[in-house]
Image 1 (cartoon, rainbow, N blue to C red):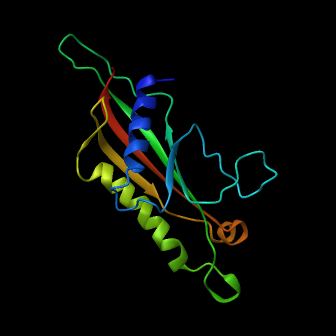
Image 2 (cartoon, rainbow, N blue to C red; image 1 turned 45 degrees about the vertical axis):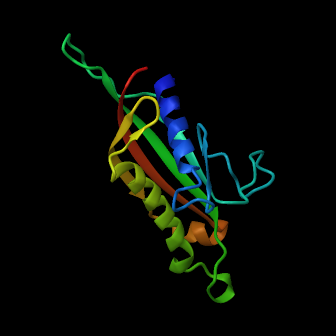
Length: 161
């Protein structure tokens, strides 16, 4: 496990939870190794009650071949997984696009925050070089589980401490 990846993930989590952000109060970010919330109280995992954004460091950074003139920079991938209960506002509690759209917008806002402005994160001055979002949601699963799960990945370039 890369200590640098954990440091970057911790720094990202702190930025996401900053009360000054536009999404503040709509979900809480936590650095974890995998999403741990469940809708099933008998699963042994903490129950999902409020929206949560899991910040997950990838365990293996991309290594680059070094020469004497090379500054050692590595790629660190951080996964973001947004989980939220969804109550349908349609007839008979059917989940409508309007019920899910704000969750997708939140995930996009967080991803854009790190990717679009080019700012550097934390003590390692990690810079987001690549971002992708998976907003697809299986309709049947959403209707059955009443839980939205959206995923994003961010690739940061940073040196080792």
